Length: 174
Image (tube, rainbow, N blue to C red):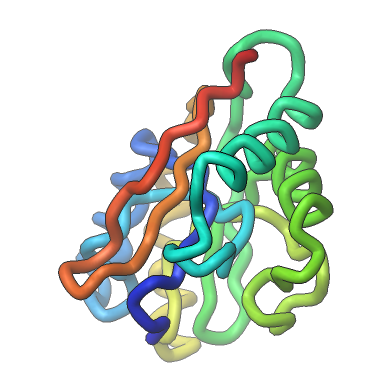
């Protein structure tokens, strides 16, 4: 479990919330109930005490360089990938944003390096379950796909003693 003050840069995907609900019906321990459906662009990011207006502007500049024209990125959640205890739904449309954020903060290695320097962007629907449970979750989630959604902002969240809290919302428009 991360320590309070840990932050992340996320694209919230409320349209994917039913996927987490399905996963929770199979095994509530496979999802984190206080965390909404999202795709992680960078975790961990800076410690919460380092985040100020200058860092938020630096992050926003990286996002705007990578964001396509317009103020929304359409996404299509279409398939589930499962490996061991993990099941996730890829979100390739957000890859450019994640790569830009990671390039702007090269000292912040995604997931502590567990998945390489530039891992694929996904919505996690099973984490820390058994392989059997993750496979069952993947089967259930597949039945709810595809889901079309869009991203118009990125959120910075921080872990507090009371759970994850939104620190900032960064729209994808100049």
